[in-house]
Amino acid sequence: MASSGMITVTGLDLTYDDRRVLHGVDLTVGPSQMIAVTGPSGAGKSTLLRVLGGIEPPTAGLVEVGGLDVGGMSPRERRRYRRNLVGFVFQDGGLDEARTVRENLTVAARAMPATPSGRPAPLRDACHALGVDCWFDTPVHRLSGGEKQRVALAQLLVRRPPLVLADEPTAALDRDNAELVVLLLRGLCDQGATVITATHDDRLVLASDEEFRIRIGRNTGV
Ligand code: ADP
Image 1 (spheres, rainbow, N blue to C red):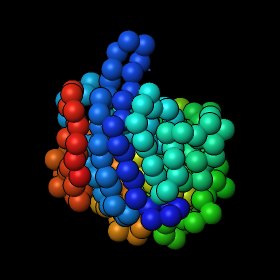
Image 2: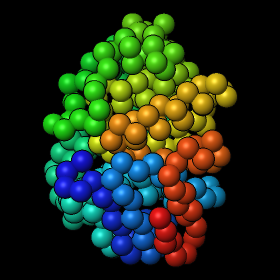
Image 3: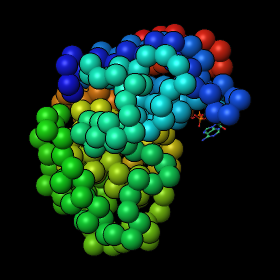
């Protein structure tokens, strides 16, 4: 990632309408660390990931990623930041449903960052690693939720973003596939990516370097 690869969040507030979802979040993540954000449903885990990924601008506070002031970016700068640095694995898609798995991976490979973290995998190898190679030429809308999630993970292997943000990446998977995903995320981190997950999965927490427990009220940690 640019600069030191550190993530520093200080005094982050996020308010939707009149509702304060994140309040006083302080978080420091070292370069190439894997962090599990945990906490009850509705605590703001996904919201924190969206702020770190430059989707949601904070209401107040400092959000710095790899020396970049993500909180202070214009919408255009945030788009560029997402394209150049961030890989998302979100439950509600991120994939082009009308296109095949192969086409989705081709688009991801074209969007490879200038400084990829690790060596990009060939498209079919990435699918094979996630057990979705049998769907290579199938439109994404025909896949189950768990299969789509694995395609989103395969995109990380072909694109190699320095920052990976994964929202409950094991939630829709059976045990074997969940373990595969934990290993894959750990592997991406070991090869240089910073990986932040929102999760309720103990295996993912155990594989992480740190757990950041988020709760209503003040949040300080890592
Ligand atoms: P978690 O991931 O911990 O389950 P979320 O970050 O998804 O929590 O949501 C935190 C709170 O913010 C929830 O109460 C949710 O309803 C609310 N929220 C999330 N997104 C929006 C939005 N776009 N507009 C209004 N409220 C939202």
